[in-house]
Image 1 (cartoon, rainbow over the protein chains, first blue to last red):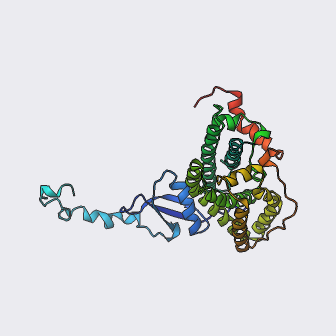
Image 2: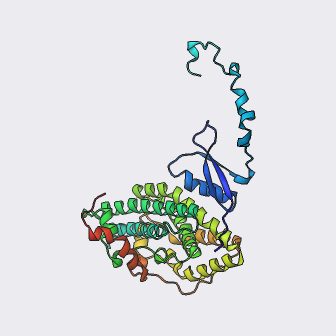
Image 3: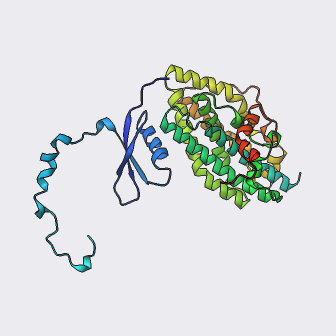
Length: 95
Length: 252
C-alpha cells in the first residue's frame, strides 16, 4: 500500500439553517466527494450539521501572523467604530 | 409450519443478516486503511447492529417465549443462526470487504424497500426507519467499487478477484423457500424474484462503471437461511458471544 497520504481538506459545517458554516477541523480524502462523505462520518455522527463544505487546505491563503500588528492592532485605538456610544431603545432588546 | 413459526424464522433471517454483517464490519475497528475510513466502517457496523436489535426484539415478541434479543444474539449456536452465507465471509483485504458489502448492501436496499410495503406494520416501520441507513451503505459501497475497480491496475485486479471469489454466495440472496412463500402469500414478506431484477440492473450498472466483469452464474453456495453455515460463523460466534457466555450476569 502506498504510504503517501491523501490530500488534506478543511471541513466547514452549518449546524442549522440560518447559521453560517463554521470550521470544525480537517481530514484526508482522495477527492472532494470523498471528503464530504468522510466529513459526514467524522464530524456529523451526532447530528451536528445540515450542510458540509470542504476546501482543499492548500487553497486556503492565511494572514501572516508576523503582520498581526499592522493588520489588527490599528483598529484597537479606534473605539468610535464600536457601537457603544449609542443609546439603544429598550424595545429593541438585545442586539 | 404455522404462520407464526414462519414469521419468527423470517425475522431471524433479517435480524441475523444485520447482526453478523455488523459484527464483521466491527472487526475493522482500529484496522481501517485510513482513520477516516475506519470511522466510516464503524458507523456502518453500528447501523447494522442497531437494526439487528430492532429485528430480533420483534422476533422475540412474535415467539412469545420470554427470550430477549440478547438471548437470541448471544445464546444461540451456529445451527440456529439464519443469516446469509455472504455476510459471514471473512473480511479479507479491503477489496474483499467492499465487494461483500456491495453485493449485500445493494440487495439489502431493494429488500428493505419492498419490506416498507409489508402488511405487518411493525415490519414496515422498522424497514422504513432502516432504509435511510441502508441507502447510505449502498451508495458508500457502490462509490468504492467504482473508485477501486476503475482505479489502478492493482486495485482493479484485487476488486475483480474479490468479486470472482464472493460471487458464489450471491445466489442465496434470491432463493425462495417455504418461509418466504408463506410470508409472500400474506403480503408480509418480499418477492425475491422482483428484488433480483432490481439488484441485477443496479449491480450491472455499477460494475460497468467500475470496469469490472460480472462473473458467470455458476454453482451457487447456499444454506445460511436454513442454518447450514460455512466454517466461519463458528469463529464469529466464539468471539461475539464470549463475554455474555463467560459472565452471564455481566451488566453495563
